[in-house]
Length: 524
Image (cartoon, rainbow, N blue to C red):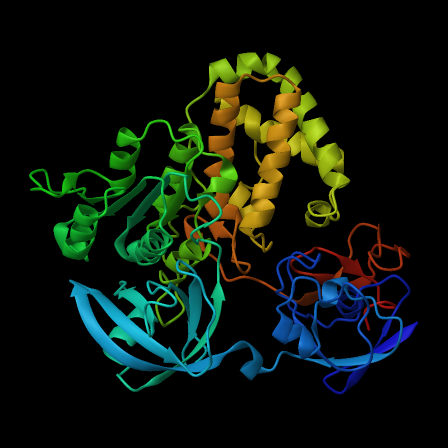
């Protein structure tokens, strides 16, 4: 048994336990989510001791050098001491060097960071105010071409950060930044690949940077950029992008206005995603970048999949969805109805249900899939505490209801059932690839595989996220609950740590997020 010291107190760690599990057992609620070293939410800093192999997997070199580690995968062989992350290791200062209006309620902000920032066009950074409010913004700048980090900020109704950035943060003022983050970037390894970029509002920021990077890299494939807004006032950089398109044979720019029935040239009438996929009905082999309104991103993701784009080639940073959820909160902490809150309905698909042999083949596919999931080192940690058969039954009922229209699923929808999990796009893509393989092994026709993939893609925004969020009930996002509570057990159970039988009437501690029960011997 090893001992671990944290913030002046010492805790024991049993053989085989991770640091995170040991602390949860003893009532210390460290931040965590995936519990498998993927999300990096539980990041901590070792003060003394020796870190075991694997406890720093995936961390940046500067964090490794400063002894940062992941408690969820750390199983030390000797005593150790650790502390919370040092603020200066994650955030650093940036000075505002310029602010100027771009169009209507959109402002360009240029920042000069105090440290060198190695980034790629299309990534995003986190901004933090002095009171702790944090928001993510995409970079519109291009490294090597622009001297400053450039953000395009749209004033959002009740936006805690956007209004402050536009109205109160002054030129020469300072703000904390962290990053860069995200994978919505140009892929230089395939310069012949056609690119489709669709954005709304300030979703143009990362897309414009990607276009400039691609052209500077002498991209040979066709590049199509569709930027949309409800009115012409919501569009910006129209002249600059139109001029770039006139000068560059393989770059095509289409500004779209959805509410103006008589939009003059060069504007097109309609939603950006609708116009884009009317023009490009088949995009197999293309790379697709999406940014902006979460409903558009969700819709366009499904359209891209149905048009033949492979899942790994459909790129959209999850922070966009998170940011638009969070700005629905006003400064008093009240919540407004959450966009895309997982209450979508799908028309019945009798062709799909017939191809699935009215459930027989669906059950076989799910059995194959979850057998592989439970043996997979990447996916299995997300299903701790759930039996394989129970999971198959729940997903079967959920999909049967979608394909047949029969009301037979009464469990949580995907958003609520995954609300506490930090799941990056890479894991979502990994899961999709495994599911595609299972479906193909059972002989489902290719056009139905595309429809199944589009269905799953439509839930990406409800599942992929950078940090946990609260459950949604009646259209309102509830506060995210965390930590432990004490309660009396009405029905006998077993301790999730030592497996001792807990009799009815015994008081126990349980974890609000995981539902794990700990007896008084384990949780002191």
